Length: 255
Image (cartoon, rainbow, N blue to C red):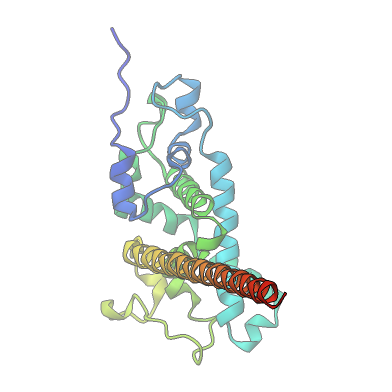
């Protein structure tokens, strides 16, 4: 009897949920492959598990958080490495990532794992989401860093309040609608920033499209100038040839 595996949804469906289409789909495939799937020879497992991408995602999270605090933090924060470190370490907790993965993205429906991991715990949820963030960071490339920063800033927006300079940024507290004053007493789940991600993608595509438009416009103008110069040279050559022939004829007539 064929072995029964845990049912999973297609990765293209998850891309729709994330709001991001991977240029290299193997990155998402790896980010969704748990080591148990490889050890149990799961037919849908990628050749490598998600742990390397989890490391990339964790590092990218810390960098994005540190960048935001350095650019927008109050004076006492940007001049203190201790406070910057504290901010980057506390801005995103594994429990927050696990809640996003479980309650917003439902990653258990996409995670390729062995039968020994039918129940997904908090650690696996957060690890998988960090791996997905690492995959996005690698897939979008250096020229699309705004996309990744938009994701992190949205996830961390309420956690930055004690660190940022109010003159530089306006933070909308996610708890204000709940009528609570003490964040520690209220349990909530951060939304996956799909809208912000898609906005960043549109902005990048618009900038890229404008860049290519300007490139081809400049190239066409250069070609026109080259053809105009070439045509002018031909006309000048014809004129000089005609003038020289006329001069020779007059010289012959004088003889």
